[in-house]
Length: 258
Ligand code: ADP
Ligand code: MG
Image 1 (cartoon, protein in one colour):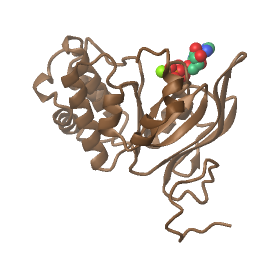
Image 2 (spheres, rainbow, N blue to C red):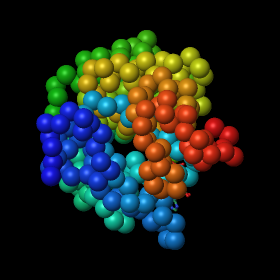
Image 3 (cartoon, rainbow, N blue to C red):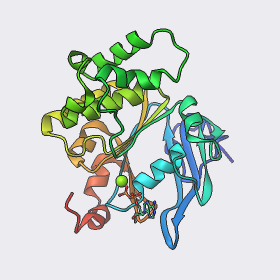
Image 4 (spheres, rainbow, N blue to C red):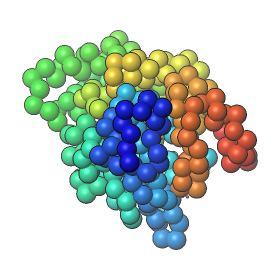
């Protein structure tokens, strides 16, 4: 029996039900992906509430990127369902998921180096029927701190600036849920801090995030709740302090360079 008025029932159980998870933006149910004999994502029940900034961590090969690509529809699951805003998106093509309010920045860069920074930002906006594409692009450029580079070819930007541009391209449509795969990989300390500030300020404005990240200093800066994936399954979920103090979590990272 459900007890919706009980204030102590805060953390959702692992078994998701779209009827009771009223504030859940994202729910995966038994989500599974096999590549031949390898189960990269194994029966994952993953729930993210509206307004959360959730970090997804785990050793190399844990299945983080695969889980993200199942959520965005880049990959089709072997089994299981993906619900977004209460709607079953499992069989919906990825471009329609973007229109539904789901946006992603993949691990590998996806910018157009020969186009200017401003032109890159206009690309996602051209999907819409907005008549203020230029001003919307400019507003996002301010937000990601690239207004001064608007007319530079994107290929001339530093690695950190390119990552910020891509985050801008992904957020300019003001998605309900933003998925970021390793947004600060290869960045300097200053660049990492500026991306942390950017994500936090977008989250303060109400955007929900799932951020895959290796850099624990970064995770500590941005996240309260952390999900640990290991061998395709959810291994732990909790506050960053608990996760970092957890010896079993430390053990699964042994032998990693991260
Ligand atoms: P993570 O992002 O946590 O490092 P991935 O999701 O990239 O992990 O990979 C999880 C596992 O699935 C790894 O063992 C990886 O080699 C495997 N894998 C990922 N993509 C493919 C693919 N397209 N074909 C075969 N195996 C894959
Ligand atoms: Mg990955």
